[in-house]
Length: 114
Length: 113
Image (cartoon, rainbow over all chains, first blue to last red; front, side):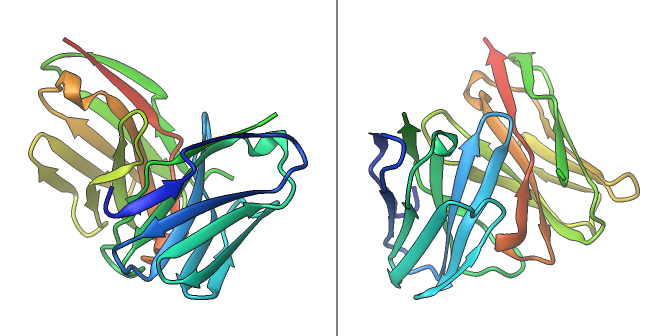
């Protein structure tokens, strides 16, 4: 999957606990994204990054924070997980964000919040 | 407010048939319309994309038809194969920014042998 590794692939956690998902890329792409995928909702953007330490909110950012201290790593943190955050989380990367942009997705992390 | 409406939610087609998935959008400022294909357990992958200056784009058995006046675009899969069974997402991008990409809710396609 285009040099993208998401970890963990599966996680079960309890309501109220902090959770961090990691996305690691080997493509040296500038842009990185976190999406969540839910039945009936498609893919929704949570946060994205346009460079080291440069991040911005997406459509569904409440309850999530991100950090990018290195080009290759983009972390998604749920400070206090809730059941509504049970979802499949996808990391994506792209070299640019201009015309003809193409997103490359990782294989996803299945998160269950009990 | 859903900006890209995709239909149907699910589609069953016989091998060799034509699969058609439709999307409608509201914002006339959208200028990039990709389709992503997702197999179970995998992330989505770009399948084909079109810009509003053309009415059709074909890549192998996959064709996008674009109707700017109706604000609709569709994916046609000719000679559908069981290996095409996947979930398909249409999307639209505002002013070319990937961070502005809005996805439809997806269509699960099943091609029976």
